[in-house]
Length: 231
Image 1 (cartoon, rainbow, N blue to C red):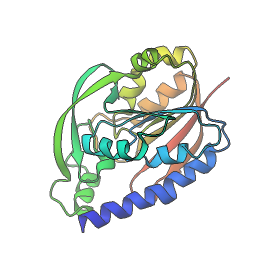
Image 2: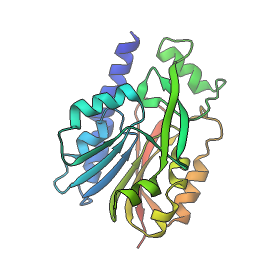
Image 3: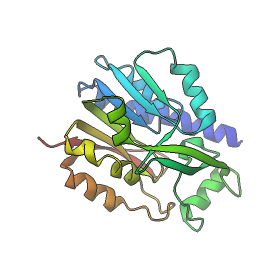
Image 4: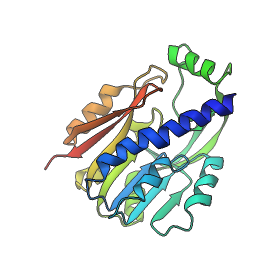
């Protein structure tokens, strides 16, 4: 039953949610994209359908999920796969693997939160966390410098409460104004401790990014927001 529920959620994500976002992205002339939290390639698959896309740098720290990415995309010359996490510093962090693997997280979970309790009920489990282990992390600034990336049309961030950490590791790149659009997941629950939507909004506002669209997931309590760099 748990597998069936996970499968239903994954299919809603791929065939409805990601497709809705794709319809907007088609009009943005995207050539270079960075996909942080690539999971099984749901968003990546849609990026590859864009006519002008030339290169996608994808990041997924979960070992089993990354192996699925390799089986799907390792022969695609447009895709660069990375099996580590992006954060505000280079080092190592413990990732908590969720039964619903798209929601695995570095964040500290508030077990008293209503959404966490509801999620456990949905997944028919007293604790939806399956496993935890250490993964390497790197600042995106460092990676962009190492890969000699000069222009980024789209930065997508889906890291289950770790989004502000990713942004904080991007200060140098943002100063150079090389990113045109940022698509970022916003969690609307109180499941993650020290998670603050306002902090993300203020960061992007300070860096001169304007909200141009939002995409609410139909079942789970989150939305993806698309921001554009002001000229």
